[in-house]
Image (cartoon, rainbow, N blue to C red; front, side):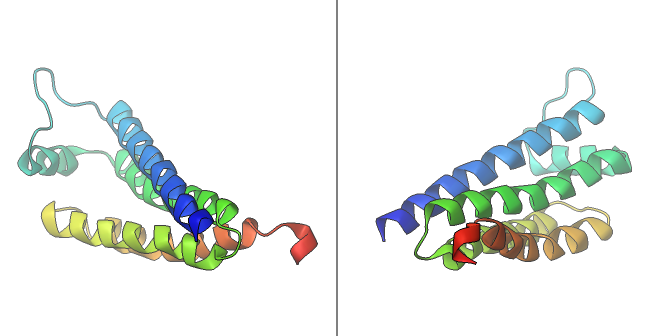
Length: 135
């Protein structure tokens, strides 16, 4: 039980770091205007409205990569309950995509693609975390 809890915690931290990194990468592709800061949802919506598709794809890829790496880390640490730990990372990321789509207006392809990625990638991470000796 302790390994599962530690696995989920480490996976959540890894997923949060990947999500933050994808946000920084998107801002590097399409920086904020000078003197502007993203302090509210209105600022985020204005930035997303003018962002190029590459920056938006970086955010979508960040959700998928966060699910993959976070679930892999969780499944690697939580040996007795690998599948549950991996899905405990993929499911909240899917919910996070739904919440972001409800709060910030975005092109239709972004939330659809981002919702389809986390659960299958978490299942792939679960499979990747199983050592060959156990297959």
